[in-house]
Length: 378
Image 1: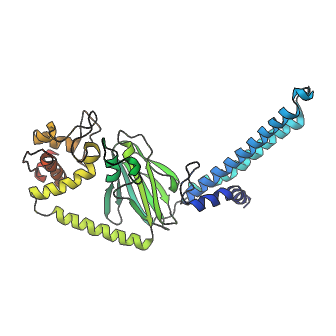
Image 2 (image 1 turned 180 degrees about the vertical axis):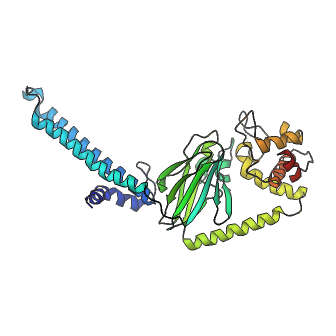
């Protein structure tokens, strides 16, 4: 009880301030919206005020000593040493401070690593170059979360819009992670290629996404809202283009969102089963290209000189189809920045985006790549 009282008294002023502004501070740690983040923030502020008190005490005594015992006042240095009282005092006080800090810190660590509640919602979080995929196994829905087109366009060379005019520049996505507020949610975080890190400061944790293993984290967001973060691991050249956006909504709104997602997935499945034609392939391929490819090769297919090759008039997009299929399905052996989409897209989606790339802009190969050709090339 006394530990909680100390924490409450020490952090009350800043807690009130943080609650009043409800926005992450540019000068201080974020208080956050989960119990973990609030505990971490309170512990941080407790240590901060202890450091402030120590600093004021130490520098206050030093300042007083310099003024009080300056030479112009005729002060003479004392010649005593090994003062027992002083040595006991400067030993006991730090010990008391350390114990006073260690006890609440240990209590928070034990609580943080305590037994997790049974989750009401489970989401598998997959990191890949350079996007996040969210899979809801119980609801049977999944989707990719890419950098928003507004941020992407503003980040291009010779962009028409300034990044300053893009809302939430590099911190916005096309499909945010949606979770119900007030419910226990378990995130099972992993990676499909290199090591990433899923980080939202206001949720109070950063968790590595490591290929071949799931790192679990349990959260419970009490208040609905939108919370933003980024990949916190230097995962490659597209590292800055992996924002994380979490929307916590009321349970009723979450149920409605799940229903809409399922309906949209059913409509996409119906489209995917429609007769495959050049017109259908170009329409579907354009949508996939703008979602998965435009960040590097730009919407106009011009690429970025010296970094990402142009697809308009490129050797791959206008050369033999076999080479085009190989690099989209398996990635590039020479340039690991070009990722493999074989495990991320279906045969039909790959066929559509390749068809689009071979016939968009000034490319006019006339090729219609079929899903059967993709299946054979895998």
